[in-house]
Image 1 (cartoon, rainbow over the protein chains, first blue to last red):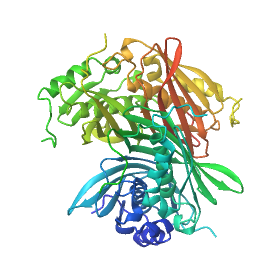
Image 2: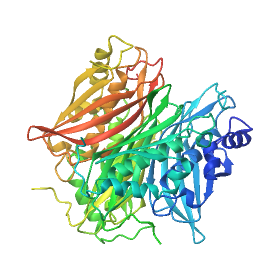
Image 3: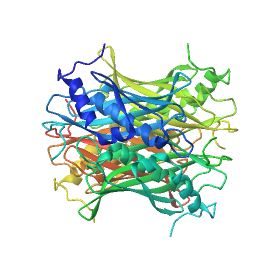
Image 4: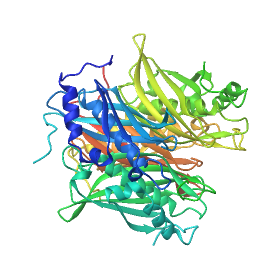
Length: 152
Length: 152
Length: 152
Length: 152
């Protein structure tokens, strides 16, 4: 049970549709694995192309799926005619992202008409267990009256 | 003229060597375009694979090269036997990253034996002009006695 | 039950002793109302001297007790000969701090030998209910071999 | 010469008037020592009541005047009928705030109709020289159609 009531009953389809238009998510091989009101999880499997110099997941990949998980958690609560922008986020890298799969779980802390605050935990799957490897605190802004379609 | 004196005279070669081992930088097509003591710039040209849902550079790409530019700026000041880790960063996205090329300029604000603080500005090239599109404030930690080689 | 085991069995006395030496806590009238391994809560009652221009608690007061609550949560897990420093924090102000009492609850997210990460929620008591008004994510550094006594 | 043009020709009087209504600034003895379009500096002299446990300026005091300096830098660019709120800030403490006077210099990085981003450097005066001791990156929101008067 989510703590939030979506303003748009079609929120899940809208989140998935927006996610599918992100070239960067395709490039890194990320998948949207959970959507609920105020919640979105994004996962990506390890491959060498996602590494930093020690062979673990690159911090940029951790930040990319963390940012997107928080963004889509917030987007799930937006009305049908609003778009969403990341204003800023802070990420603490807590442990090396060493493992076979990365999962970012974005959760809305406080929804708002203009600004929404989200918290994201990123876990790395290693030896069958999820280990917390990063945590983010993020501010997002709703853009009223803008559809989320790509510009033409 | 840099404000800092490197501890390792071979800092530039060491930075380039570490950069070349990052699979994620290859994947997104990023290049290290400037290294000096306490300074590193990373650039990436636009292609659709780096986009968010509106067709601009994805915020994750902005964060990825911003994080790396600050990291290598700090790494350039490390002694030859130390490695570097991103502890955390905060990024403000100031304007849509709409343009043909993204350039992150990382500069050390305060070097330290254990912690180094860096500031990074990210610019997007549009119509021949660089526009500031993001700014980061970052904390890095030196790992003494660890080479930067990938683990075997 | 705390999730952490303190390295110093006298951690609570040590936290209270350090808190009592902070002139700034006395000035604003803050009290340490809870200490456990990896946990510290600090509260302050409203008075006009703590206000911003609209008559609510000033954001600086929110940040001050938030920073200290996270710092003492981390300090509670330090060995007896180590001191602690705030490296950085990020605070999101979620709602006006309008009420009669402010309570910051600091919790360690990840303890470490050198760096500890803490999360702090700040609540304001209004009409008998605690309302979340701010959230912080904080990085702290242990200073080994330094007692926490004031310099002479 | 400021880089910005104020929307309200009476911006300086308005900033000073708002500052004078902040009980917390009086309590700590802070003074607004500079106002220009997109700029505000706040200073406070040392006394024991502003200390942390080692006798230096408390990080909460550093954050309080840093937050306010950025807030008033942004407020100076607001139209006459708008108020301003701190959305969030991140502060890195770079060196102990050991000295006789603390000066926070807030500068707008990017003004906006809804959101304004500010950067603040905090210096401590010691032995006649200003030393950088903290740096902040801050997000502020304009509240259109709200005067800055205290609520009655």
